[in-house]
Image (cartoon, rainbow, N blue to C red):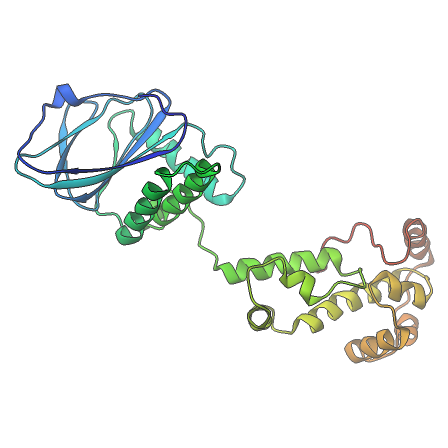
Amino acid sequence: MEVSEILVTHVSSEGSASGNAKACLHSHDGLYEIMVLKKGSVVQVQPSGESVIMNPGDITFAPPRIPHGSYRLESHISEWFLIYFPENIFGGGASSLFQHIQALLGFMDEQAKEDFFLVRGVQNLDIIIELLQSMLEESRHQWSNQQEQLQLLVGQWFHWLLRDRRFSTLDLVQQEVHPHERWVRESLQYIQTQFNRPELGVQEVMGRVPMSRSQFFQVFKEQVGRTFSDYLNEIRLNEASALLRETSLPITEILYRVGYQNPSHFGHRFKKLFGESPRDYRKSNPSSSREKNLQENFLGNYPPGYLPGYSSIG
């Protein structure tokens, strides 16, 4: 069997039938085969020729070039899904999920040196079956991006499979991060690299995550402990305080460099956070002239509003 893309099939078998262990053994070159039993019982034949009975909720993985086979028990009504996909189809994925899939497939390859990989009574079976139904439906259409969609669905399928407690012992899966936490973290990273742009605002940042405006404000406050506006101002003012200590640049130059345009607004905000005006803060926090000169030489080559090298603010 030669398949260069993801293929999903559904088999429903009724009536009286049986099989022969040797006769059903086969292998695929460069192709993984996954079997998910939904209903009934099926006999799976290992490379050694030994047989095991699969029950609903059991899943078998057959890596490329590993002999395997299956046949239905007599007088049993059985139903199962088969997923076929080529080697390295997830190898180019940069996401952590695809890396976990690659790690699982590598583990399967090691296990399959002696027999195929069998998971008994997988957790989240309802979700796994539902995703298989979606994959099957997608495979029946000839969309131009069908394979991309199937790859995403298979990725989701593995995601739910990898949540099974038995896989956590393999060190394949890190603790799952709630999407809200991940989105806020991405927003913070974006703010920390863009804070010196005066036009940066909540609309631009929240447009990068799949949340409504009200939800973004709520989740941001819950995760960060302060509002978006307070956090952005804090980032800018902390950077301004560092420039006041470490350089002798004019205060008006500093406020432009950290994203402010109004001197009185900058002064009000700065005093509210640090308890004194920018001028008094500089007097009470002197720095060596050598360090100031180094900073001035470094920053002097860049226009106001641009801060090279400040990708994160601690």
